Length: 415
Image (cartoon, rainbow, N blue to C red; front, side):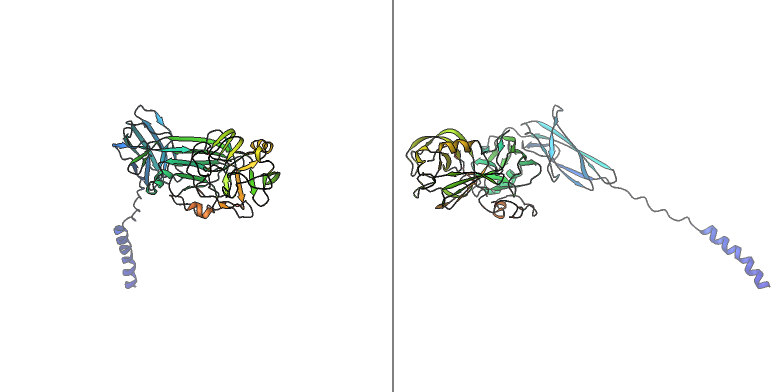
């Protein structure tokens, strides 16, 4: 009993001792939510910035949620983000020797924000020689489904500078139909097309934002060029040397056969996939000084196919030969009535395929963007090409195929 009493009496002392020595449980430390980290290019207080400058934000721990650019009068400068969000591109060239301020905000998932500003001054107008660019895609036109967006350069763009130039070439389509730019080997032209022909009704907007762009060490871009046009109904021409017939197809249906006379053996017509480049109600072929030339002739209803002077045109002098024998200097002769009718059916940008002649179409002799495979075409891009950008299965679309072209303004050869 004495032992029990001691035990019972001692118990409250033990419990009381535990109660007085217990410390409150430690609360977890409050987690500090960091704000996004943000740096901008051009760097603050930069000077002699090119007129082609873009605002490039580098953000960690968030995403860009606001960009505002103003000039030194406080006027808002409109800019659009690149598709990958890597930069904001002013929609018009910046002005020389002006100061611009960009304010950029990044937001984290937590809602915390960071805003940075950069103020920079553009360079004076450059005295370097310009690379002259020509955009072969006019505004407010209707083009054929094979129309490549083509830009020519004089002098040609060196290989090391092509990626910088290509990054300043923008194409948007509605409905979306992504494509790729592809350079000719000598850098004199670059073409843009999708893996397949444009869908009829597509609207295509193009911007070549090259004004003030440094091109290599010794040249600079000449101008900012824009155009928006649409794609019309699908028209395709097939010319068979064996039968001396042209098949005219609209939306895949044969609508007329036309007898033709092609180039004779000494001046053969090229085989390959061409695109109608120009249309003339009337023009003059002057081949004096050219190989196999030396004549001047007025022609009607002429449609250019190559820079070298191959046309489809009315040829009343060879009507008896059309459908039977080749007598031209490389052109496709058809009757005046058929030439007049065809002018009302085709658009610049329609595909013309020649089969079975003595020579093959040379890359660059015209808008030859469809004359090689897609795999070969994309090798001409100076920037990475999305791996999933592929043509539709061959059974679903016509054969498709590259790029090239050294432009020779205005009609010259023909026959």
